[in-house]
Image (cartoon, rainbow, N blue to C red; front, side, top):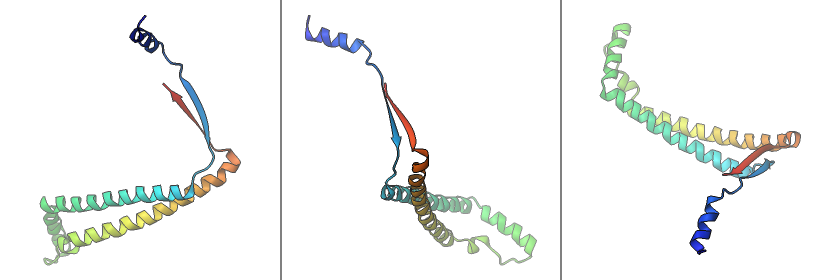
Length: 134
């Protein structure tokens, strides 16, 4: 019997699936802080880009002009223009400030979550995680 035939017979047999059960008993504090910071920075970039794109779409479709007409009818002030009150610069600045605040607060919450998990492991014993090899 050739080597190729033996190898073919071996691949026809199914390997038994192995299961491993692990218990998560510790989360590294600095790893959790770094990961939460990275996630919240990515979300801040998404918030900034989405805010700018929404403003550009609203401005280019003329919705600001319609809102200006509505406010001029309600307030009776013909000089009021919403594009002057909420310009692209103001929207971008506000989105950057909110994104940075979200990143700072989210990083702090990630750190607190890691600390609370590490403290609660003493009571609960940790999470039991199962892995299976198919």
